[in-house]
Length: 359
Image (tube, rainbow, N blue to C red; front, side):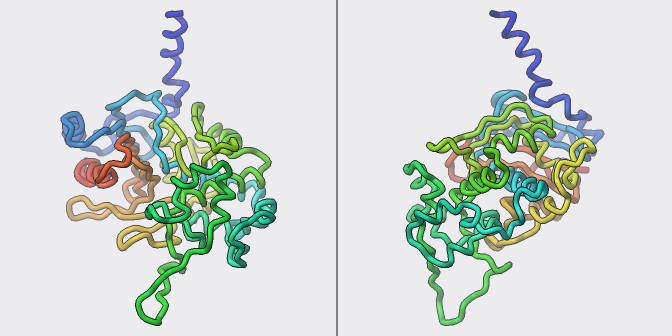
């Protein structure tokens, strides 16, 4: 028995895709090793809470890799970071001509849902894939509002999650004065995990494969990702809105894939056009942040410079970030779930340390 365990442990690095990365020293990547050491000291001293791992790739090569909880084989629950992978799967379905476009209407794709719809409204007929990709459907769904009918915590109490979301009423909007204010990019952002879960059924209907199987065949396999654990609804539908577990190294591959315009190790995985559309602003979330196709977009400041970034984000402060102007990908995993300042903590790691190590 002991011999079997040892063999598994020895095989684990290759099994978790470590061999897919070319490793270089921080100095070779133009990074300040002393500043990285200072970051490690701060994390170990408890200045940053419950940080699991920090990885940095520069110019497509792995330059820094540290684990503070678990190791390279540990599968990280990055919560809503899953949403960005769902965006990638939708792009692959369009590339494969399994899905016509982001303009495809949800109820046309899921006609069985229309037949038992509650709170029927003609505006529901016009909800598109793009509306769910940009968190801007007219459904009364807002995870940032505990009183919202569509808050995800209410969804988890119901067996049929997709029907729960599609049954929601249309949301209203109060305003001051008679003039209507047109939102930037023409979309009203409202963060809705349930809407992204509906895309799981869209993927299944369009491709003929459950979303997890489609991911394994079209994305994880080509990227050399050999271990992924999904969360499933009570009806055994993969939760494309959150909870997917991947290793830190495999999460880094997703950011690098986007930096490479859809290629991994020289092989085309997805269309560059989809990559660009995904990280182009389609909605505004606040004064300093925008939203693409399930990707967050903002600039991070360090000293007197500002660095535009696209990133996956999840509860706990989890971040998977691409900095195009630096050709740098960063993964920060954390189990600081539901804690006050969890995202601010991660952003401080980026601005006070990681961005300052670039020479």
